[in-house]
Image (cartoon, rainbow, N blue to C red; front, side, top):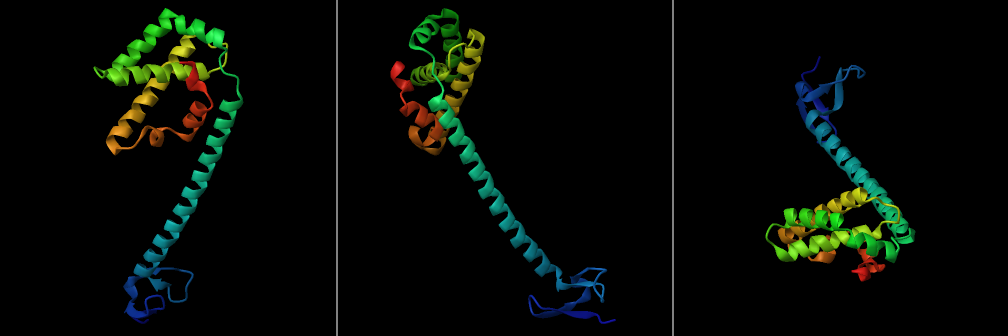
Length: 178
């Protein structure tokens, strides 16, 4: 048995030990050397990852579009009910305490977090309990704080940190209530 073998990919003659084992081949070794096989696998995996990433990006976009359409077509809380909910002292105190907890001493952030919570509550349809609205407000405050953090960390504007879904809902007129 020969101790060397020709690799057609890199066009070099190499030691047999440089070729991976393959029992299906007559000489018991792969047709290309290990380095070329690794590089081919690297290229193949990179292409597969790019395809997967693009597929996932399209799927996320489709889901986002569906949520936006649903949010724009779903009925928002009636103005009269929103006024009642807005006057609910228990909910207002909850929103204030959660916003204060996340904002610390920053008054501008505190006001912004409170406003985001009320906007998110206004976007929900009628029939929500006060406890459910407290949960919704807490999520809105955490989301708004995360948006502020990214705006500061990466030096981007509010519009860049706002998701397309949030922007379309805001532009649809939810912000006019406050």
